[in-house]
Amino acid sequence: MKVARYGLNNRGRDFAVGDLHGHYSLLASRLAEVAFDKERDRLFSVGDLVDRGPESLACLELAFESWCHSVRGNHEAMMFDALLNGRHFDLWMLNGGEWIYELSIDRVARLCYRLAPSLPYGIEVATPFGRVGLVHAQVPGDDWRQVEDGDPQTLLWARERVERRRTQPVGGIDRVVCGHTPVPEPLLLGNVLNIDTGAYFTGNLTLIELGDLFRPD
Image 1: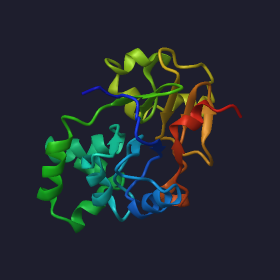
Image 2 (image 1 turned 90 degrees about the vertical axis):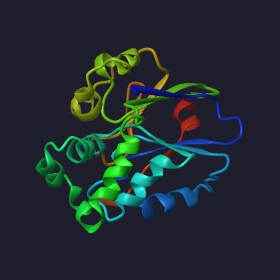
Image 3 (image 1 turned 180 degrees about the vertical axis):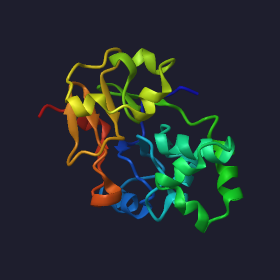
Image 4 (image 1 turned 60 degrees about the horizontal axis):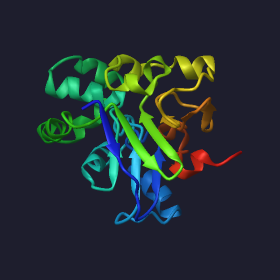
């Protein structure tokens, strides 16, 4: 699945969270701060649920919760490649996959087998103010329509917009939220907000309400 689409949440609030990288306790703390209601509110993740942190399994299991929806990050892609395709296992280990040795590899592989076919590269959320798109790294060609058929490498790995501080808006969508490239604080470039504030090494996990994306500075 390339893009998952969600309609208006008429019962509660919608939030987006930056790269978790195995820090479930940080997420729990941030959700408590905003009195997140799992019966009414929804959480959208920009991916990289796993690796580098001590609670990667708990973060991976979030993808099966009815209130949590995640895009595919490059770390999920590396995990799927290693455990499901038997490829590039060393690459995954070099990028924080060592947590697998503390668990049953078969157990995690079974979770990946269930998750891989349905974990999208993009998420589109309807809000009362406009449509919000989420990808892990970067929208190909600055055109939201290219998420459906665009290059997975760009969606998962690209850093060009952030590194060049490019402000060209992404067309075909009102706002975009992404992660992947750590920044000291949320970085707005055109209509794209990067919310990866490096939680795994800074302890600073960014959680934003989607409606705040449309509020004037």
